[in-house]
Image 1 (cartoon, rainbow, N blue to C red):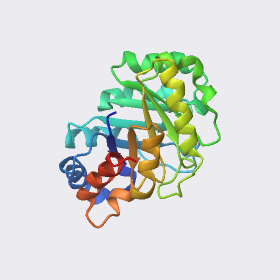
Image 2 (image 1 turned 60 degrees about the horizontal axis):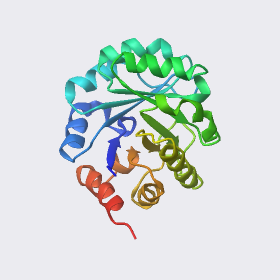
Image 3 (image 1 turned 90 degrees about the vertical axis):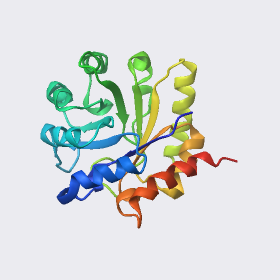
Image 4 (image 1 turned 180 degrees about the vertical axis):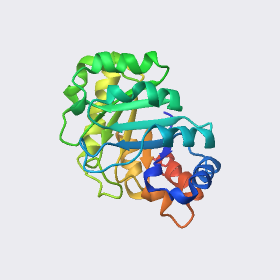
Length: 221
């Protein structure tokens, strides 16, 4: 199973964003994760299409855009045009998932659904064929640097079983509190894509930390 490390620029130094992204790329990052928050779905406000466009100019890596917003469909066209490679929307904010996921795909992007910690997996069981990615939140969304929620491990394990039973090739991504101490357990449970912000950008050697996180997945008992 492939391991993907997706550094979240939410934790990057925006005064030197180009350098931070270049560092991630040199360190072997697979994707760049971009958190879009609207101050309504989550209690924080971040950035939009202009930042996606800026990041796209800095790298050829896939841009993994996580929309923590209400009415996410209003942003699809602009984000796709700005350079998003994939867009992940929240089941809690998107009551028409089938239509919305298909629209994301029509725009040439990977289509994903995110689930908050308290949202059950059955929120997506009817639209598994439309999923390119399932994002299991291991913190409550809205802020970086939060403490990992341990029961997310079992949720990932059940998500892997659900997707395997449906013969789905969708990636399972986890976001929240991913670090050296937590990534191996999530990998063992069936996740293959890992969003890490503070763990990378606050490390003594951020470039090397990406490889360290990947190595933790490769050592299984």
